[in-house]
Image 1 (tube, rainbow, N blue to C red):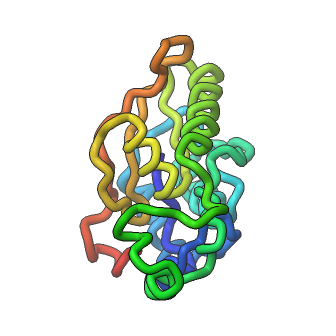
Image 2: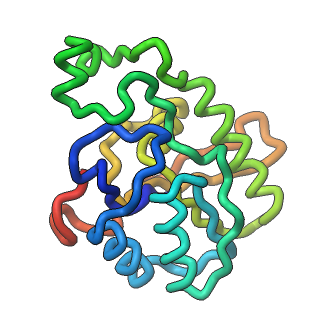
Length: 192
């Protein structure tokens, strides 16, 4: 699962959540360059949000793989009152919340994210057994999945992500693998 290319709000330092924001020119270039770094996959799928769907479209076309219909369960975290705000605005209006990992009232819970993303990944693994599927999604859900499975929670750069091994029918169907970073810091410009 990879994070989408840079979006307009990434470039502005705004929390996107489920806002449907377009890629920047750099985001389009990141997606095009990703095809040079990725191997082959049996399928490509994305969240239904434009920044992920456009990234997936460019990659699937570049790899010559058909793009599956988007899956709403791969959407970014619903960030409630923080949608569209910058780090400084959040700190001004909710002092200490970010440092203390507190969230505003309408912020989606980690349990909700883990349930929907796990269901999406198990469904994909069931549809594509013994296959490799590329999911283009969002940093927030990747990080929540990593934390939920007790592994490190590093920042996820644009076109960075994580390997997930999915075994439908197991009591713990998700195994979290290594962090993936397709571009070295600064290779394609500053990434948020």
